[in-house]
Length: 321
Image 1 (cartoon, rainbow, N blue to C red):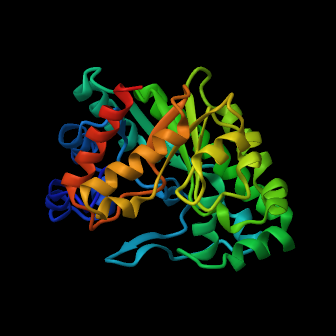
Image 2 (cartoon, rainbow, N blue to C red):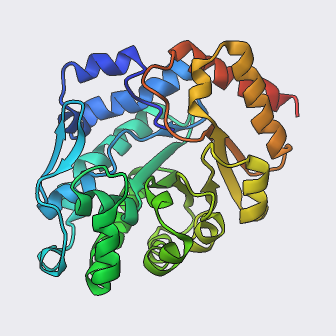
Image 3 (cartoon, rainbow, N blue to C red):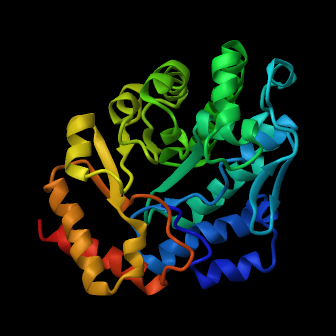
């Protein structure tokens, strides 16, 4: 989860030369960042370096990345008139640099490990677009859902269509699997997920290129797991707040799961990291279909040696099963 990032000196060196959006839009540099964890850590798959909000820039909402402030939307979408002004996302012309990055990474990997493409889920992307940035309570989003459901549906339709074409473009360029990140969907009650998110996620997964595995991940989703399974995906991601054994039982053992070590564990001494990694593997019980992963992204203060050690520990303990 979030393989490339500030915890790696190699990444920080590249960021010193490029602004964040500039880096995302430079296929040569973005490919280099994507490959860094593969070369340094020995992970079993590469995850494309990009950002979940690249897809909203062509909507003309004014995407900005301030230093230390995270993404900001200069012109939030708050009502019917705002949504009515949104056109379809021209993925090929607006996001072609991402497909170029995928092709470069695919060529450089030369079959060593597969490449996972990714995109933000429509709800999470909509949350940024409506709120204007990160939020604690998502009141603008919920107000739009409750007060203007037709406008909400129109917004989600635009994002579902654009996201499907964006992911399919990554697949066509060489991604062997894709992951859909619904980072903020845990803010919703199950009834709201069923009414305002589930139909759109079903539509998104139905539009993906047949035969390509899709990972469906969210955070804070302990109360939503059966609904996420219903929404779709070949793999359901489990964050660290869920017991893996219980979470897998709730989504069903006929679907794969990904997760779910608490990311902060990587700040601990190596013996403790080993203990907690073993606990995750024990919870999976050696059952086919478990992808060992963190329960969310790597913290920026995490020692790289600890991440490398985790990879080695998982390989060692998995080989014994």
